Length: 87
Image 1 (spheres, rainbow, N blue to C red):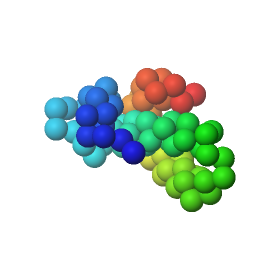
Image 2 (image 1 turned 45 degrees about the vertical axis):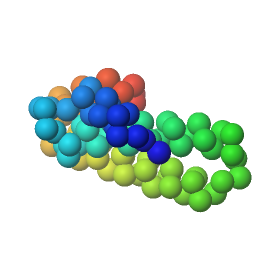
Image 3 (image 1 turned 60 degrees about the horizontal axis):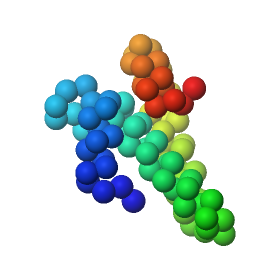
Image 4 (image 1 turned 90 degrees about the horizontal axis):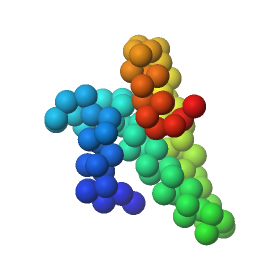
């Protein structure tokens, strides 16, 4: 679970302007942070299938956002994937 402070620091890295909270870049970066934390949790608790399902849903959601961004704004897609190390 991300705290508000963690979420704000992640958002500052990829936000397009000061009050940006809903752009695909911000959503992808927040999902990436959640995915990494949940993956660490699942390494310790490998039998937690409920969290595993949530992880799969988040990965699918991030993939959908990435696909949209690649289709609409290729340069922004490349910038986000480079910043977050997704490729």
